[in-house]
Every structure is written in C-alpha cells, then in structure tokens.
Image 1 (spheres, helix red, strand yellow):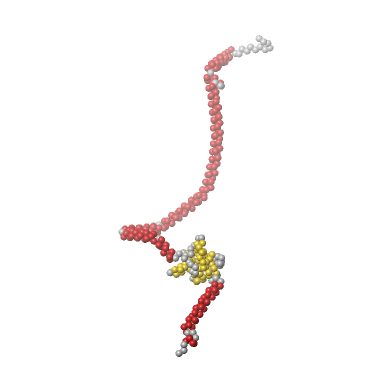
Image 2: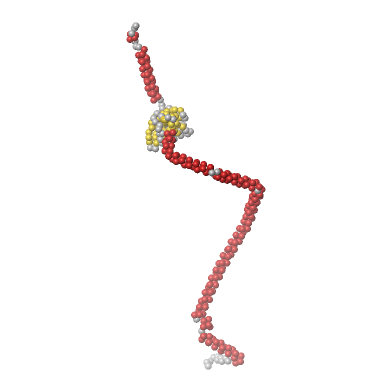
Length: 319
C-alpha cells in the first residue's frame, strides 16, 4: 500500500486550496466592482426638508417607485435638515420635483420617494429639491397617545349624548311630534299648490293689471312732466314778483317810518313851545290877543260899509 504523501497533496488540501482561492477571487471581484462603481459618474442632488423623518445614510431613493440612488449625507441646519443623495440619473427630474420621506417597510426603515415634477426646466445639481415629511404610523400612534385622554372624554360624552337621544326617542312623543310637523308641512305645501292651481288665472290677471298700471303711471309721468316744468317756471316768476313787491313794501315802510318820525318831532315841538301850534294851544296871552284882534277886525269890517274909509293923504309936504 502506497503512502499518500509520496504521490502529492491530499484531496482535502486541494479542496481547501480551491475554496480559499475562490474566496480570494470573490473578494477581489467585490473590491474591483466597488472601485469600478466608485469610478462611474454618480450625480449628487440636495434635498431640504423640515425634518429627516428618521432617514439615515444609505437609505434608498426612489423615483416613481424605481430605486435610483441612496442617501450619502444628512446635515442639520437652521429650520430643518439638508439631505444629500447620490443618483445614477436625474434627466427625467424637473425643477419642481418634490421629495417625500416615507416609511420603507411596515417593520421600519425610511426611504425617499421623488415625484419628478412637470416644469419645463430640468433639475440640475445646483438646484435644491423641496422635501416633505408627512409622518407615518409611529407618528400617528404618538399623536393618538397624546390625545388619548381627550379621546376618552369625547367617547364618554358621545355615549352620554347617545343615551340621552335614545331616552328622548324612546318616549314616543318626539317622534309623533316630528311626524305631525312633517304632515303639517306636507298639508301646507299641498294647500299652497292647490291655491296656486285654483287662482292661477286670477294671479295672471293681477300681474297683467299691475303691468298696465305701471305703464299708465309711466305714461302719466311722461305726459305731465312738461306741465310740471311750466308750473315750476311760473312759480319762479311769481316768487320773483313777490320778492320785488316785498322790496317795494320795505321801501314804503321805511318812508312811513320817516313820516312818523317827522310827525313825532312836530308833536314834540308843539308840546315844548317851539312852533306856532304850541302858541295856539298852550299860550293863553297869545290866544287873548288873537281873539281881541279878530274882534276889532270884525268891528272894522262891520262899520266899513257905513263909515267908509277916511284916507288923509298929503303929498309933497309934511304935516
């Protein structure tokens, strides 16, 4: 029997060597593949969002459901985060593209789903894509936990309201009253319809009469408008004459005032002895002399026919 060492390596060693060589080749292929992928031209886009929503580096990026890249960097900034992603192609993306941060699987994980947009201008590497995080099931559960106490209160109140409504309807009177009200409304509607049907001709006649009255009033207004204008003109003339008369009356009143003032002045002078009237009325001596003179004149006139007039005229010499 020949010893195995005299004829070379054993089969186990050969298998182990082949396996090790295969692993080395596989590892080298992976390294070479990564280097080749790293050397390919990947395109970087920037996404700005109010929240990262739990997205992490290496989270996938999808466009219309097709994986196109992954997240390479997440940087917090004032008012949100800046997410950098590497993609193999962005030729179909537009400047109004929107990136939504969504749940990747029901068990966890995040992804970015990009809607390409419809704008005419294509998206470039210098543009920033608007990111939106609308929340997921975890946020919904947290919100429910926050408002759980309020929900319990609301449910109790709804239960109380439901019970009160059941008790109210169980009485029977509310339902009967509602039915009676509906029946009354139905009767009123039927009565109104019957009234309209029975008086349709009368209502049409009334409408026609109203139209005729409206036309007659319009015609009357049109006809009487010139007369009214003429009457207004006459009233204007009358007012002008009245104003002239009032002006004349004012002047006459002023003249009467002057005459009355003069008369008052004359009466005042007569009372104060400044004219002949005062002598006739108040001076007794003057009246006596006047009476004596009038008496002598009367005697003279009475004797004149009988005695004549004795005229002694001397001309040329002194007496």
